[in-house]
Image (cartoon, rainbow, N blue to C red; front, side, top):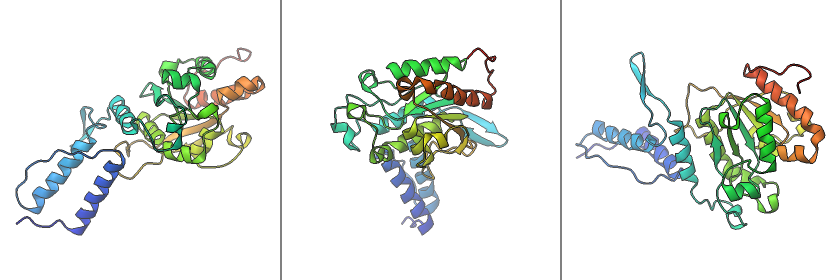
Length: 279
């Protein structure tokens, strides 16, 4: 008769399986094992290995005597998108959205821009920031000396709020964990929060844009302890807050202030700043 696992191992296994169920992973491959606690532990490890495959499917690299798996970032982002599915977790799914708007860009970007939610154009095309605000964001990125393809762009909520209204707190809380996982996969050096909703969601504070802008915050996305996207070698990003491009379209006077924020980001990344008078 096989030995019963000790309580500590039982708790560890239960926590691991509960976490994967939260991600929407229910099916695991089974391996036949012989009797004995050691073989049972090996089987548990095999189950965990299969579940980790979606996000840790890159090549192995040697670090001394240890072998570490390199995160396959495109596959990891795809796994998050599949976990979202045709989401019905909050009311937005029944308020007119056409599709999930996940995220787009370089999965190894040094800069990640985070907005609040998709608008009508984004809902139609399935890509964030493709309307008028998106065109302005493209211009802002180009002014930094890089292209849209060099950065990663996402929103706090993945569904269009009706009438482009501001996402509600419950909607941000429901969708936010997927954004945190996206950030953990991309591992940018700098996250730029576009607007108050993104800033408040990422920083967990309730303050004015005037007070939030003009400085960097140390930022580490909140993840479950055993999240497959978690990597002890990544120590988080710098987070900067600036105005949302849609707000800048309504009040062009603030474009100069937004440009100051982007120059702060450029300096942090060691990017070449434009000569005075070239702004």
